[in-house]
Length: 366
Length: 213
Image (tube, rainbow over all chains, first blue to last red; front, side, top):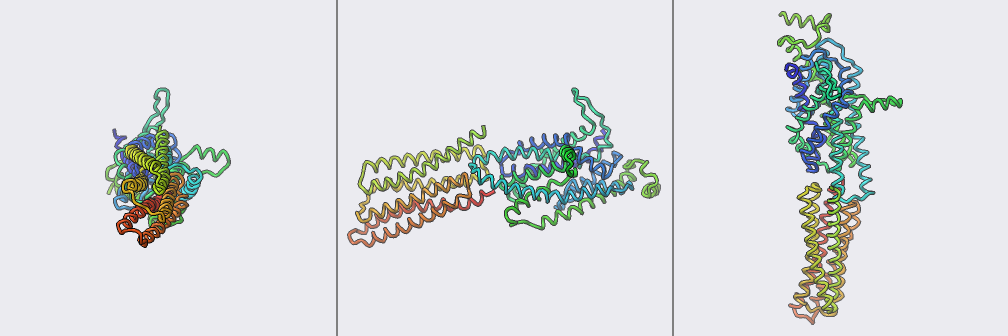
């Protein structure tokens, strides 16, 4: 029971991911009534869980390299700090991403524990955040021109195009949900991987590892978020930000899915390594920012009219402010959890010889 | 399953456009028969155009129902419906004009007959180009422009021919005012068919921009 209490912050992060980020994949499809909400929710839930279990390890590993949270109470607080940051910034209508919040929260834990943050991992993660929307824009730019050419040459009847687009939105949406699960499960459950006491299970000859069980739980939390809250977000996304035609929506979802997949796939990494090609870092990225990049790509293909550069500025500022706020919240709340609620958030051995340990001891006795 | 339904709808839409196109030909021939006092052929064409109008109506209703009950083409169905209803006005106008010719039997003096036939021919050209533009809208929106300017051309041509005809009618010293007004009424009605085709073209111009991805 206690374990569930500790996992609750991660599950809450998962819920909010499902509520917010599923709309990046199915928002336009649902709001334009091309796909029914329940079809979208079922497809998204199944594939998010699949993506999390099958391909979630890559980005989780990268987060683990950034900071290995080694006590479950610490993991609880790191995830909670990220969740609070996301919730608070959303309330203030500031652009926020779970990926950026969790990274900040982990760095906050590192500082609290007195560990040095792996700057190589941090640089890799930060550069991926900048790269992902740019790459998404490039992909959708190319796809847009390609689709346009195909439609010009093939002269598909409007009714048939409608049928193809619906199928495409569901199939590519499924791929998008899979990639979202694979890329973002690390945000939700990554910090718990080394500390959750799940044992391997043998189920009808199928071995389910502790990590898979954790990812399944996280995936289910995302699915609950999709079913309980994502509908209204989808309707807002579809109608509020940019009016996309169903065909443009298809391109946006396709580019977004590919980006999320590229930054999450261990299989692709292995293939690239096997062919002596440079690999793509496996880093959790923000699906919302990737979507903005994709829409921007279409805007550029249209000749660059109607692009709101203020939105881009807001995103760039989020790259810095979100992790910093999450790190501060994480640091302060870890302090309280350890010194007020008497929970160990860092393995005791880690604290020995650490100046913060001395300070905390003083604080504790004082 | 989904493609079978789609194929069925495509065929219905093509059939609807065929009916409009055919009704143009029938209208032109009906006017010609009237001007030549060929009663039998005129009646046959009048019957034919009434049948085409009815069939087009049925097809339009079937397509409308399918689009709404099956939530098809949600982004453009309002546009498609508006297009079908406006183009239905064209075929209605042609049928009514031919029908009124049959009821009112205006006496058209020999010197004006060519003018009426030219006017009918020009309005039917506008109608035909309108149908081509609609077909392009369904499959290749980029080609719509190629037909729209022809619709506008034939609509202007029809206006010019109708005006010339009306001036000639009212300049005539052999006709009573009542006869002149009666003749003007038919010139106006035939010209209105081209105006209705222009209404469809105006809608197409906007909907085509909306349809680009």
